[in-house]
Image: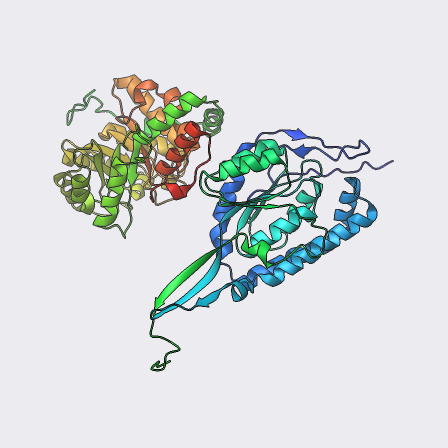
Length: 293
Length: 308
């Protein structure tokens, strides 16, 4: 008897769990050959709300982890991706990417995670500073994560665009809500499955599939979202983002990078989602001639 | 309707006659209340009603006058940047804080409720419980939230429980008496029903689910069972008894489900803070955020609301 293949249900990822969308809806994207990619959750604004709640809840714990531990966990995500490499490549090819490109996209994604894993416990060593001030204060600045970040990758890639934004955002201790590519959503959910098995606390990364024009506005206007990472060049979306950010002065960072470029990764993608905190600590002049230190 | 104190009509009240509760039936019925579609305008009205039914509560060992004053301020000024909001119904505190609270809410219409009778365990002799209650009443409490002796109840000593409630009711004077059953310790719905009947017949003005110290607290199933006891008593005597679910109701959705249930079990007469209350500490902020979301269409953040 011929065996029937078991198809995977792609569900959204909120708070470390894989619920179906609360709306109960789905859509069926197709590849260029007209083959159906699957029945994909058509998330609603209420899913956006739930995801932001989960991200906010996870923020304190994730930001308070030691930088070294965050580094270990990012590395662990990369390990999990390595183990699922074949699955990612198959999905990319199914979604219309050539065999060669699929291979290099997955490898690039893994390497990028490793790159940002390395940065976690070095951000403050490089960006932090002791500042010279003209009074008896020990004055120092450190970077802190901004908070809950809405991540909107360019929809033209399934995996690398998403990883290139998510990795620097969570490296410093932010949590995020990610809108998956409309046309190529498969890898984002498989990535969520890798996250769920890689010690990333639930809620640190939340991934929603569905229509961007339905989810972007509730995310951009949400008072509990502190920053947005937007990749792409759609004028209308950018205008809406700029207007919505005014409500609670969200930090908005826009990118138009080619993420397949190996050099498109650096510390400044991390500090885009960091705030600088400066502390004045009253103390005797440390370097002074009469100093007791 | 006023209740005749001391001389009661129901001399022959017998708790063993309390009806047996069909648990599966209750669960079925309760799940229906959670599926009602509530339209935007009704939702807004419901949310404002919920605010006005809240007993804003702080019952912690670490409570201080400062904390109580802060909470009383919040009770009067829920979110001043959005005009037209009601105040909460009452603040609920320990007897030692009643004086402070009374002074802090003076002139606002917000009532002061005090827990008493060795809250939350109730493990103290009757004299101590009476003294506790009298102290709270003399300090100015408008309402007394007493706990029943669950140990004695579970032993089957129903007369003891009945007499105790009656004695406390006597000590309350003009203050309204809420009787906390602590349903999390009674476990079965049959016992919840029995305890409700005892409390109602012994003189409770309100019956209340829980102290908030034990989980599960105010589940819809338990509240439903208690509402049925109130309904049956009303059908029999024409006397209205109030209901106060407390503990675990921390979001607007659950509170709205409760309102739907009260409306459908008891009717609109109960939809005011004279007859229905929510015992909660973090519910108010969630309701406020929902009200602003409903009005503006924008999801809100706790950063812009007062700390509980």
